[in-house]
Image 1 (spheres, rainbow, N blue to C red):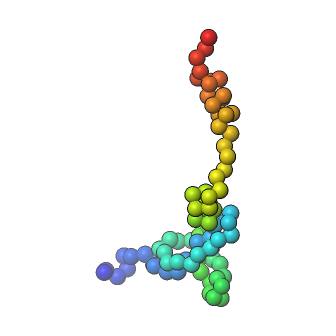
Image 2 (cartoon, rainbow, N blue to C red):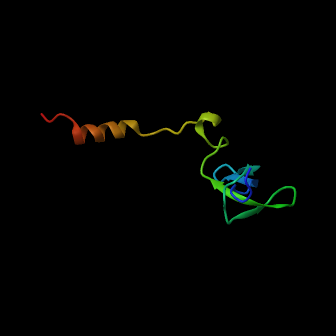
Image 3 (tube, rainbow, N blue to C red):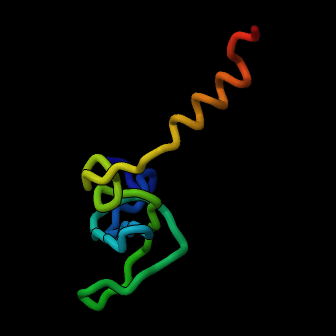
Length: 82
C-alpha cells in the first residue's frame, strides 16, 4: 500500500442516543467529539439515531401508526367526488 493516501483506521465508539447502547469498534470516520470508554481511554465518538438496540426489527417493538387517519386524509384529498 502507498503511504499517506489511506485514511487513519482507528478505534471509534458508536453510541445510540435513544437506547444508551454503545460499541467500540474500528473505523475511518472523522469526528470532533470524544468519549471516555470503560477501559479509561478516550476515543472518538459517533452518535447514532438508531442501532440494533433501538430498531423495531431487532427489538420486536413496533410503533403503531395512525393509518386510518392517513387513509381518510388521502381519500378526502384525492378520492372520487360525487
